[in-house]
Length: 171
Image (tube, rainbow, N blue to C red; front, side):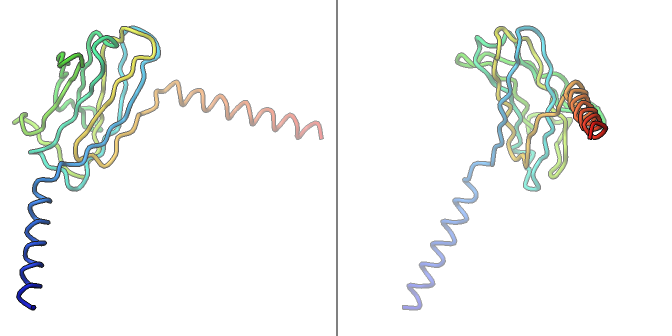
């Protein structure tokens, strides 16, 4: 009986180890829209997970071919140094895909638990064109608001403060 339990535990441990070795790396994705046709550039903050592996690390942007004339990505440090240079898209079965594979680039290895700026740019062919930014072993990917967004927020807060002040004087 003890031998059966030992064999069962050994088999379970072996299957777990093989499953962990064959498991796909985690992937985070964020979809974004380009409101009007023409050239665009959108920034994203990408934070690699502590389990990041340069051998399996990949960042890519993809969309349907008819929505964009071209699509490209560039990975920067937070201080603004380009790590990859502009990577342009290729047509792959009706999809445009701009892809950076960490293991294929000998000059740069991204680090785990580190923040990077990713810029997706290109030429949108239609209104409300959608693309998706994917990152393997990413802890998080989030859009970075443009300065106009902050200006609009401050203007709105100023307007609310002005209305509150005016109502306080009337009372």
